[in-house]
Image (cartoon, rainbow over all chains, first blue to last red; front, top):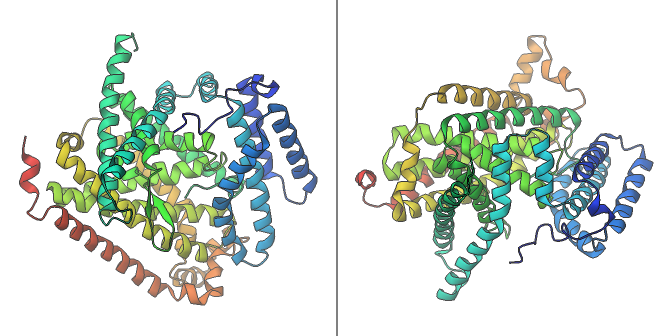
Length: 203
Length: 319
């Protein structure tokens, strides 16, 4: 797996990338706050937000195709729940509101993720006096996420190269053994990491 | 079950965020008081592990697929407070890196999946395991508790959506709970099988859970219970209480039209009358609920006998 499948463009360079992480995060939060609270009859606000996001995306030089593809990938989850709102009378308005609001919010987050690296976001959280324990756990998780996903894919590949059929009745058993083994390896790795951290003077 | 942005209104966002912040704070305090810093890497790695195993899909009926939530599994392996922190980390990373689950809905998602699911699930697990010990008891309790955790989290999710006026409670309840009753079977099966696999290869990992009853636990669990109950009172009870529509009648008879007056804009309690096919009377809903729970419990017991045909009691006592 490519280690950057989540935030591929977060480490490239543009005027948007160079903005401070704190400014971008508070801006994104404010924008999302406004998107979900402004009543729908202020249609101009949503157009304005849409225009602003397009401009920001252009400035950030994140490829539009990438952003649109990620949006389309996430949209079914939104639509799946939103469809339930059609079941009440006048549901069309609720439905339209949900789709517009979620899409704009999703675009905001995608843009934030792809212009700001996770570690700088954590740095902002640290300044906000969020529990350092929690931040360390988040940082370790982000660091080893890609390692563990790779590890899991290696185990899957090994399993597939040793078994023949896809629709195997033992699928559940195999899946669980893989997950169990992944947990064993993660906890062993955690032990080693802890030893390494201590050896480097971590308190 | 990840709620995106735009599905919750302001009051629900504030309520869920407040409950989640309080819950995670309790978990962090408990974790810091009870565990040495050596557990910090373990939590980070377990969060990455949960994220990675959520990428493995299993088939659910009708061509859809589900994936592990891992709340009860984590709670059994590392304890409830650690599970709250781990699942919260997973949700934070999913929210900010995957755009899976909204920022404004993060509080709600944390409440459903990182507080209610592991805490209620673990409570059920611990209670059942007290009665039925041994590895077979572990399997029964774990699979049943996992199923419950998935269903209860989905009920909370429905309550939050209904409270926001996004979806009508009655239909959403049937759809969400139905789907998660199926996903929950997968969750229970995988949790049980993973525990069985760990029991075969690393039984000492399962033994860690036995050291409970440390100081500070009681206070923490009271706080957890309080938070979960407040959440259920806010998000579920206003809608679930009219479930036997008799309760509303009682309210009317007694002269306080309390729920109706409190949520005049919400059609939820009345939705039941508009969808007679689905609502079908409260009695049938309760009966089918009970039948479902009993069936899942029977499946859990069956699973434990399939996995460990010759009682497991002695096996766990091996050094």
